[in-house]
Image 1: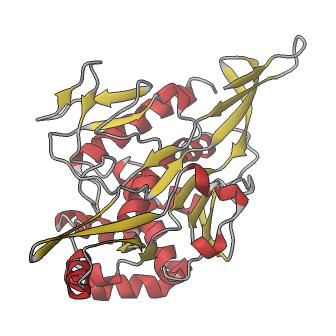
Image 2: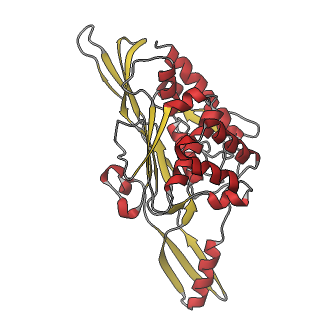
Image 3: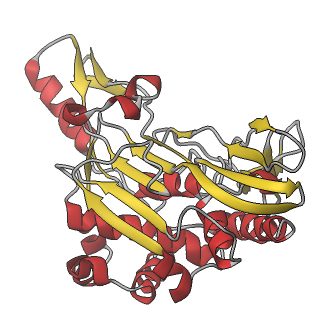
Length: 358
């Protein structure tokens, strides 16, 4: 946080800035779960709070929530556009902000390139690719290449990959001016909320997963609508995915790797490993960070947490959970009850905080 207070009666400027939340989606564990989110009085840069600022009529240097989506070679543009919209619709619906008025404030734009620092947008979504890494992505600070290690054990083999960071996301920062601290005279977008998926994964769409779940025709229909898909249509698909409790499943690729290694007769090997994975579960998780959600299984000291049936308290009194897309647990394609409880709590509290500064 930075604070400047100039001469008497000159507006003070406050910038609320939240660092990016990192999301490693390659670790699975089992335990009871709950939710965690940002402190509600520091969450005015989240997507939900930006919508509330517009809804409540604050003077702002942005008129809508513009979202820049960088196209990907493997994640085809129509699917990426649909699935980005689907992730936003899921969090809006869960937080009680899902309606046509709010959806009209969201403007999605697919581009060949999006700059992570472009304040002309409220949100930047980049599916990074190794051949298209740019300085603003700061890849080396977060992401690294993975490798596959195999060792022969008699007639069998043991092959394993290291853990890897799949994506990161965060709410960016909003600045506000005031003559009196309790009344904000204007707000401004100081940095966009961001989603960045690893360049060391070949990200693909949900098309095959949707077909397996019996939702292939609906998915294809909505994808073909592009810019014209409605919030009601997206909500319908969100709820169907939730009813089916869709979760990513192991696709058996490593089994094929083990077979190939055994056929090679090598005693051991270490090879580069670039997995091919559907990107939606990571996208849904990282958009959750844009909405102010924190890691439910390991909340930071600055998180607000809440209990649920079966949840546990850590040594600091925080409630923790892994039955959530915001946890390092299963790769959910839908928001669990813990996710829904957490975002609704944050939306309710952040609105009250923002209203108190009108």
